Image (spheres, rainbow, N blue to C red):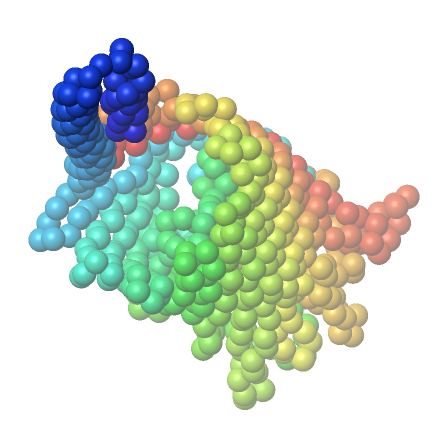
Length: 534
């Protein structure tokens, strides 16, 4: 602007000067010439003065223009900053409105009320959590009956208390419970669901400066897949209705002490010491083994005396590496276990464990998610939804870990903000660990076991599970989302196959070793109405 005004002014001045300078007056006397020259000089000086004044006005005008521009920029920046501050304030107000403040601690309530229905084609006499490893073969009379059940016991309540010691140090406590517990089913095998049915109860401490995270209490095992990092409450379970989840899903909920280190919230490394418990398969011929061992005892004080607890003296140890590179989430973990029993006057240790991987990928951003997890090893049965046994017994009294693997994969489609559709498939398998002692069949999956009556109601059937797989499909419809919470309806169908190891059976009325390979199928339908008030 200044250069344009200045150019105009200079051009005007030069034009006037040129006009007078180029004028060719008529010849005159010397005195006349002198007078004319003086007049011209005076006029030129006057024009110069006018030009200087004009230049000064141009400078003043430009200064005013620049000042106004600066004012406009500053005003725009101030308005933008005010808008950002207001948005942050509104967001903070909204978040604060969802919390209860008490002595500097913020408490967030959660959970839902559920009314669910369950239909099973083969009766398991089970509530919301299915028993995949005991789906009845046809020799069991109830395998020929259906099961219909209504339940509200998966309704859940949670509370999260959070307090900041300083901007870099954060403390929290969390508890979560439901109503699926019963005294006889309360054990330490997988969910540790003692009454009232504890799902998770733990404390955490997080230090931002060093990237350290401590957790102590009962929570999902470190083997459980996370959706990001290694932080509590980011565990990624399949979105199904069945409270036992899906065969192939690796998990437990148990007491633990966990320490995690993160590097820029991208790389995570954690170690967890977790409550040990061993599940056993005892042969129907175990009394014929030459050595009888002590491997579990009746539960004592604080437990239900109708249950048993394994002998334990070394915790389960889980180490996990997780990476969040910007696209997806990836995990690699290792599990170490010790199995403990006593025979011939001495204590014995047998070791097992496994390795696993997991990943979560947004195949279509915010629309289609894919998750995969898998685990393989020896003595890892208690970490699977099917609850296969960890160990069996060799004739000399040793505990014999059973080789196993488990896989789960699934897609979740977020059709819109109200509807999610999911499709999952999972499998758990174990390998035989069998022994013979003086003609007595021992161990798991022994082909000498009698499976001849597995398909006959009331018949004899040992029927050790070899493989359990399931396909599951379902949806959730959030038909109300507003300031009064959220209401949703879900429906799920699953087909499960339980396949047994081959055992003795009849061919042409002749008992033949390895001829009978029984299987059992279960079709299940679930519906669920849920209200999330918080």
